[in-house]
Amino acid sequence: MKHHYFIAGLLLLLSSSLLANSYQLKKVASGLGVPWGLAFISADKIMFSERQGKLAILSLKNGNIRQVSGLPEIFAQGQGGLMDVAVPADFKHQGWIYFTYSKNIRGKGATTLARARLKGNQLVQWTDLLITKSMTDTGRHYGSRIAFDDKGHVYFGVGDRGVRPNGQDLTTHAGSILRLKRNGELPEDNPFVDHKSALAEIWSYGHRNPQGLVWDNEHKRLWEIEHGPRGGDEINLVTRGKNYGWPVISYGKEYWGPVSVGEGTHKKDMMQPVKYYVPSIAPGSLLYYNAEAFPDWKGNLLAGALKLKHINRVSLDQHGKAVHEERLLKDLDERIRALTLSPEGWVYFSTDSGKIYVIRPAK
Image 1 (cartoon, one colour):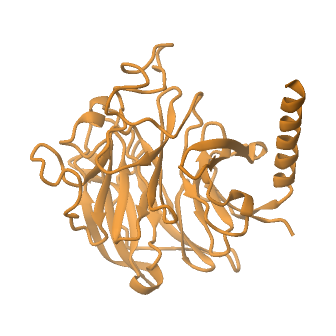
Image 2 (cartoon, helix red, strand yellow):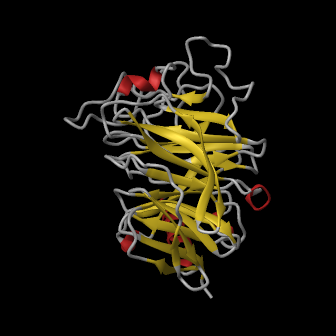
């Protein structure tokens, strides 16, 4: 038996070593603020948001960066600011760029989904699609990432805004994943459309602070990663109308002592995560890898880690269960914020120190 464990461990080490030699890392930009969101708007241009309220475009041909005007006022306080920027698969034809940001509502921030088009270096036709009912007195847990399915819907996450009961309160958008049509209209098949005591935009609830959201078009499913408290970060397979438990169940501890949060880790009618992290990695983003550049990563989830400073690679089986984890780029010692995929299948990511890198196959 020991011999079998030795062989398995040796094969794992060899596999990891071969994988480390299969890619190269290159820095493509530096000196930025906190690049919170990344989106390819053409084969060689990345639009990126900076949390303090700036938007710019990076040319991968020459490294030039040009600022984009036309943003509304951004409530850049606490963990709020200009957050995600995302484009759907048909962006080249329809031209809409989607944003989440914190909007000033009577001195408090509300996570807001908006869209606009780009004309030259300026955003035009800016439209707030949903100003969420999520205001609190805290500056915490705004979320927020954006994802698109293949049926014309847009999803985005809102954190519990630092008020734990919000996670179980369907009269607030806080602590939820929301679903709209891409023009901002309400889908008739949302789970709480006919519930008078619930907000109809809610797709799932019981979330603490969603920091990654991605649609897996191959299997037609939505993945989410969120911050736990002290331990208990979660990867969830998000399903229509389901309750993901926060703050009633959690794998995390209280910040003030070694005491479990809530009632435990399981409860009837509350969903279990596909994977949880103890201690916390503090996720910043999530990517489903479905390209050919790195065959060993195909069908894997990649998450940027802020606290433990790496890219977290999670292998999934055919049923969507997490079967293996690898921590990439630990030696880079950077808080990794956003991830995006280039048309070639290369992985671009940003760091809180104001840099953008690319992982591409070794030549």
